[in-house]
Image (tube, rainbow, N blue to C red; front, side, top):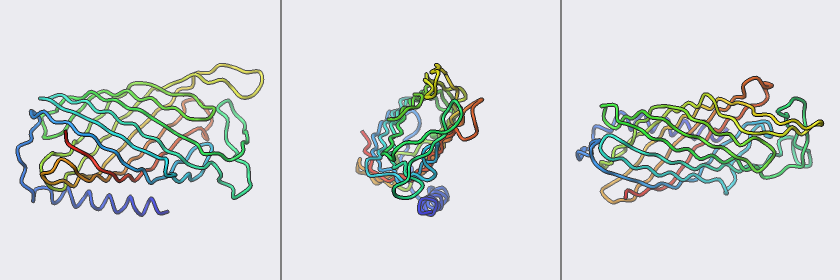
Length: 247
């Protein structure tokens, strides 16, 4: 799969960045400096869920991220949208999917949109550019599915603002997210299914002394329903490439 190959390249570059980052002078942008940045990226990845076995991202996929830090505190915002065709059985076939209440449904193939918004408030741990914090995550789709929301926690290694190849990475876990869902089958029932969400992101920035920089990353998102059939799950596997600007 092309995305796994590309993710391997990004992973190798991250290792190279980690090993070589000391080759660049660090201009003293410690955690006490006030900094902010904005990034926009194009996800080139796959989605696996009830409606697709391998949904390749369409051009409408988008990633937007903004963060700021002052002294030992930081905030982080991320909007991500994956767009893919649900057709997985070949041209002319219906999309079959597992219903949350059990059983299966069918639909004419369509362009699905999976969106999420995540906000984090973090505090420095005393290690350079390493933070821990709490997060809020919300997801929504353009088809019949619960919009999930909930709180979690995690850790993050932020990219240094010094010139060079600067790695970053984060791991956040949301143990209890939920949303309202009306069953498709009769009699209609109102459910509030619970999901666990794990988000992993890593990559690197390539930057000089100019405010604009290049960013490459790889992200994984895993959602698993609690107490629902095993087919009810969501996996996002993204390589993303884009540009950022320090403000």
